[in-house]
Amino acid sequence: RPETGYGYIQKEPHPIDTGRQRAYRVKKFVEKPDLDTAMGYLAGGEYLWNGGIFVAMPETILTEMKKFLPELHEGLMRVEPVLGTDRFESVLKEVYDGLAGISFDYGIMEKTVQAVYVVPSACGWSDVGSWASLYELRKDEYDAKGNLCDGDTVMVDCERNLISAGGGRLVTCLGLKDTLVVDTPDAVLVAHQERSQDIRKIVERLREEGRTRLL
Image (cartoon, rainbow, N blue to C red; front, side):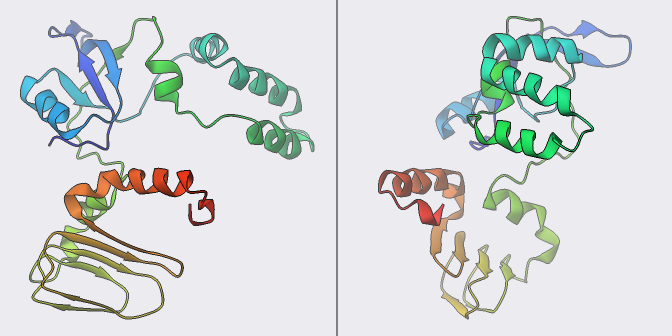
């Protein structure tokens, strides 16, 4: 499906012979496209979801980190001498707290000039990275009208909704379709299920307004 919450891998059109499994040279990595772009990826057939499973020799990863993420590489070099000692936890925390939050995909894979290959796999994979993914994953728990409910809820004339009532109170819904409702002790989220990947826009707005207590 044209999932906007996943990264994608564009592959070369022709596979290489590995003797056991098809593999393709990677053209590029793309993070979280908009819906129109994702639909184009699906129709074109050159793109795969990026499952985030990377295989490489340790020296290759360290070399790439040193080149593209030097602060991370320096941090690892500070941790190495204390492995297996009573200083490990304190040094690890000090290093970790000083590092910028960046994924391996952004920091390394989108920049590397090394030969990278992808092996397509149809394994029912999902990173459960969105409420929509969670709804899909738990389809065995739907009620007769396709609602997935956690906590104290009452549903009247509702279809295909995901309701998470974790705020310690009753959540009642009337006439809703394809809606996400998440009730927590300090906030309530209401969204269309198809927009669940856009929740990051709410996070960005809260950060802009300095309301980081809720993040």
